[in-house]
Structure formats: structure tokens, C-alpha cells
Length: 311
Image (cartoon, rainbow, N blue to C red; front, top):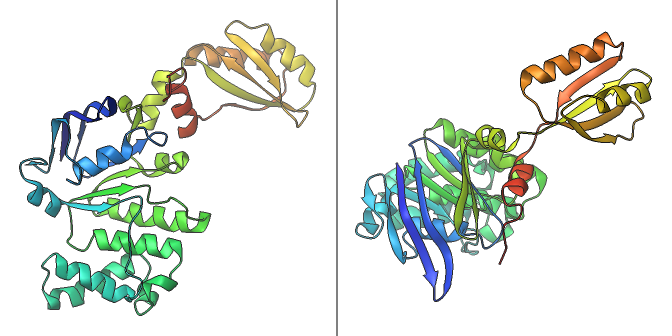
């Protein structure tokens, strides 16, 4: 669906995007992770044919972004991180304007617009002026606008930016629905844990370079030779801590605040972890819970970019 080869964007001596190579299959929800200025918006703008690459190329549903930009635009719905709305139009009129701009016939627009408003949970605001809508509602209206021509690919640059928690949940649920419809979705967000919930794959970009690519689980597995184990005991935490501190592959012991729990770093495989727990029980360590700490996407990002020189 999307093929990117050697995509590079330079501004004088500054390289905003450095030889990006990436393939995204149809129906995939792909999350782009990176700090501000890492190259996410540059990549999205190039794919949306709004910015010409310095070198390299990309194809969207088989169309070359540089040679066939008009065909590419028919394939994509683009939602930038900053978008304008026409305040003196009603929500329904706003979508009708864009539908007309895409050459959609009036009769078809009358059928399509109510469906889009229902999809983004704005049916009750169809006659409201855009300028009175909340930020979250405006975000959802812009998403509906990007869907007006039924594109195969959605490119969403920071769609949850500036939204309150409830609005972010609503946006996430809409994206899940679009995923079930088979849309290929590229999404960036600074709210990293939420990407993990909705994305099939993520790409970590730093200083214009793709430094990691795969599922969250795959990237975590690559990074975590060491595991953080959290243990809770019924009583005699001191005895339990002493036991685990004496075991091989255990380091960085930390006591937690509840007087019953502690955590440590374990550098071993699953079999060694099982033996560790088994021997603890044989030593009459009264364990209530023994679990591996789940690393979230923020932890993954910080680990991947650790030590990378930032500009």
C-alpha cells in the first residue's frame, strides 16, 4: 500500500529526513513515534504531496508521489497537525463544501454527510456553526472532512493534540472503527501509550532517521534482555528481599512504598525465571504476586533513543 525508498528532505545543510525506507501493508495502522522535530510531519507532508522530497521516492497504492500527485491525493485523506476551519459555516455545510471540492455530486453528498457525522459522533451538531464547537469536535469534524472522498489511506498528524482525556478516548474509538473498515492509517502522537493500543506497527524516528520498526511487542523483545520483576509478599519482606538479592541474575533491588512489595532487575530467560520463583516458594517465601513489569511505549521510546545526540 505504501512503499518508501530512500526518502530524504534537506533544508540547506540541515537534514530533516534522512534516507527513510519503509513499507506499510494495506489495512495496517502504523504509528509514528518521535519527539518534536524528529521528522514525522515532514514524512507526512511528503506523502500528502504537499512537500517535495530532496531525493528518494514513495508510492501510495501504486502511485508515485512525485510523478502522479493528483492520483495520490485521491488515495489519501490528510489531517495535518494544524488545520483551518471555516467558522461561519455549519458543520454540515463545512463537509458539503469539501465534498463539492472533490467533485462529489450533490445527491451523493446528501447521503454521505449524515453518515460521516454519525461516524465521528457529530450528528447532533450538524446545524451548529464550526466556531462554537469544542476543540475535540473540531478535530472529529476535520477527520470527517478527510474521509469525504472515501480514501484508502488516512494520514493523521497528531490527531489527539490538545484534546482532553474524554476527547482522546472518543478519537481513539473512531480510529478503531476506521481500522475495522480496512483503512490504512498512518498516525503520529505525542501521547505514546495510546498508540500502542491502536497500532499494528510503530516506527520510532529520531533526528530524521528511522531507528526502530515493528510491533510494540517485537521492539520490546529486542530491547529487554533484562526484565523488571515486581514481587509482593504476605509477610517478612526482609527475608524475601534477602533471598532474591542472593540469587544470580538479580540486580537493582528497590523497596516499594507499601511495605509488602519490592522490585528488581532480572537478567535471565523464562526457564531461569521459573526456577527463581519455584525456589522462592520452596524457601517458604510467602509470595502473593510475582509479575514482570510491562513496559509501555514511552519506556520503549526512551530506551531506543537513549544516548542519541539530540539537535
